[in-house]
Image (cartoon, rainbow, N blue to C red):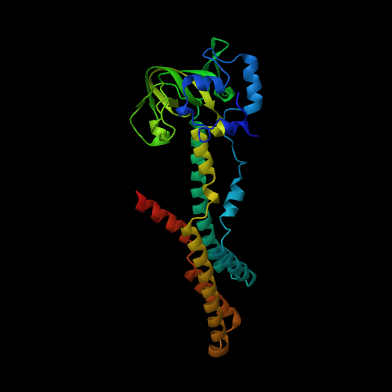
Amino acid sequence: MPTTPDDPRVSVSASTHPWHARPQEAVFSELDTSATGLDTAEAERRMERYGLNRLPEAPPRGPFMRLLAQCHNLLIYVLLGAALIAGAMGHGVDTIVILGVVLVNAVIGFVQEGKAEDALRAIRNMLSSQAMVLRGGRHTSVPAEQLVPGDIVLLQSGDKVPADLRLFRTKSLLIQEAVLTGESVAVEKGTEEVTEEAALGDRLCMAYSGTLVTHGQAHGIVVATGPATEIGRISGLVAGVQTLTTPLLRQMAVFSRWLTGAVLALALAMFVFGVLVRGFSAAEMFMMVVGLAVAAIPEGLPAILTVTLAVISL
């Protein structure tokens, strides 16, 4: 078996190891397996090395923490500060109104984040729960999470592909790969290697985890499991979406800071003018400027912008 880096699971990923461009004999040799499959002892050793064939799950955040995270915004901090001061001054109605605005914005963000987490769970549910394999030359059904690189998997109509496979025997095999390529028509698969530069949809000698066998039968060698599969790579990209800061989000952050500064400066000017020039009491002027700040700050801007872009993209 070839040498591998510290994380052997990554070493068999299609992104670093173009199995679709390898002849069948080379794949058998590199994975140290045969058409009769691994024996039980070797499969257990590889399980310890590669880990379970399942996608990693990030530690879940409780609903309260998710809701609280929606208030991590400069504009929301200003509103919460105004609500705190209004409450301290005994203006209960104004406090409730301001907090209501903040709560509505937080609920919208909470729902949107929940949909993103649902998308991650849906990707994990695409994986097959059982797989038919050859172990020591015998057909046996095992939990799909126990598959390891080098296992020989048998596919037939109606099966979900349980891992990334390099096909070496096919019979009228058609696989629906819409989850990966968006192509609604099932693809006819074969066993001949393709060029290393071939796009995902053109790798006709590969069967990818999470796709569906619509017709035919096949035998394939497991070449990638868990996060090293193509569906695992997509899951990783989806999980990392929240950490990305797009140009639009950066512009919104800059706009928020400028708008907050402008609103606070205007509110301070009005407060000073009302107290010193017009003779209003400090309490009256404070509630006036709080109302001005609440009206001027677009606390729902992130949600409105997200919905607008979603509608435009339809």
